[in-house]
Amino acid sequence: MTDEQDHDLVGFCCEELEDAVSSDPTDSLIEHDSGLILLNLGERTEDGETGVVLATIRFCPFCGTEIQTDEDVEAALGDVEIVE
Image (cartoon, rainbow, N blue to C red; front, side, top):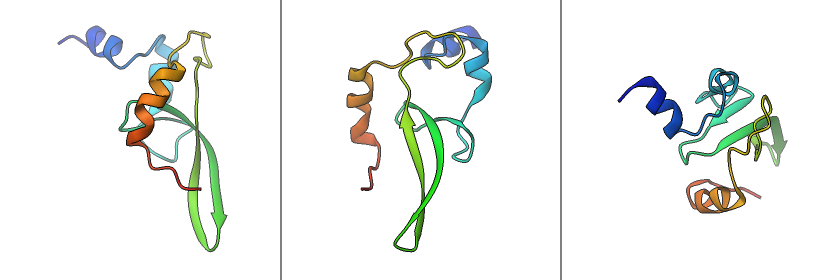
């Protein structure tokens, strides 16, 4: 499989997004194990426990292309731990 094919499979619309997305949970844009691309909003401490606040993004912040539909997000939410 070529790099271009890998690029298409993970849904990167532009080189800037591909360069910005990381699997490191402390980075700004994260590719979660579920396949979602998430925006790291920072840490939050509640009841003595600290966690990371993540938000889904629908459009690429660099080129404006829709990268995740509502259906994509809903389908992947079963793989994401949500703590309220």
